[in-house]
Image: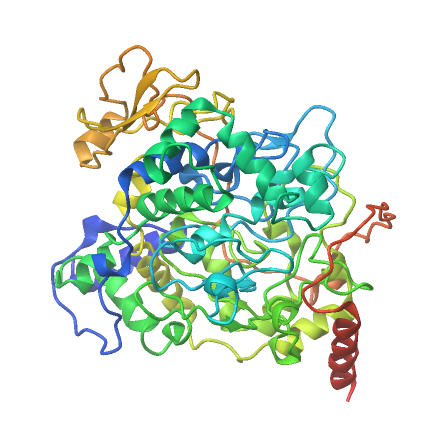
Length: 577
């Protein structure tokens, strides 16, 4: 078969499959390197990690003890088997049971609303270059704020933390819909509902007290902060950040190997996609730097689905993005550029998870206004649960759709139909098998003794020499925290079972792999996304008229409602001119 025929077959395979590495098609033939490639990742881009602190953070990350009702963990929405996200457009948070696509409502539970934004992936978020968190950047480094970090209203830091990632860990635990629960269910939620977070009467104190009451955690923290030193919420946040920084570092993809000088690391099709990405397609204008993000904010006209962020009183389903933080109308509907590391593992995409495939996202970038107008919510991956909000309210509001469209800041990427497979192939070259396999992995149990999410990840091969960290079991007796080191060689991974020796009695195993069935990934069609109708507003289901329940006190926005309404009127007036 001629080389041109091989390239054509490769393109057809990727177009049908949607994503994949296609390593078998590597030809080893060097190609001219684009002159605007980023610097390769180095150890200096990451902080030094105390492995004992990281192992402690591993238990906390998977432990529901941080939740108000002790029924959900950080890992529930950021599970490593689901790309450090949850595989859904919008999550079911507090009140749900299970992981990812298998998550459902607990018995007798009712969810007021889905989590309003897509659960972001955590790859490389601990790198020192990451200074902005969340889709709207409401948490970021800022010299003029307490301890150098801008936090949302009433949540200023009480102490310094190791990174913005650590500061970020303080927020989901006090969110009613994410981890805290409703105000009448537990003390953490009650204090958070009153906007009491810091201080002796704050929600953070209740969380730290729960952790300190577990002898195993108390002993583990003794080694980190000193015997008898009271556990502060920032100590918990730093442990979580240490784990996430260590576990979710992703710097060993084929593209990383290419940047370090291995000219054979990419296939011909991936190389073609790289040249487009850093060339005529213009992707690198925003997806720049080592981790493919400028950490800035752009209005790309991504469809808005779900309950919204209640930024504007007459359109609670709207999400105005960055403007809610800055108050600047120029920031309306702008969202942070996501990093593309392991992007093949992190579907669905966009701030609201509107698109389930990379192909659909690329097509949106090719003609954002048309794709917004033609968007069909059937592309989203949503759990079949009843909530008090229709998922398509924003799509049914012609004026809101016009506002989103008017804010779009570019006319479209210069990408042709036959170039889409190459771009998808290059995005596959950003997938890191080491990070995907895990380093510490998922623990068999957590130090609180509480049950973990009922569906555990598949077994992975681990070395026979775990890292041992002295600690104690839940009852306070001597024990060892064993952080098994993942072996990601092909032979080990194909074995698919734990090689860790059986722990001795009284040993808490924090990173031993398990053999329980993994959550089923969402079924995603990779066929071209098209519609026969001209606009989603033509054929979308009728908007449900559901009265909003009285939830009592509502947290004020970072920007006053009066100001948001004024800006909304201003944008509407501009559209009518």
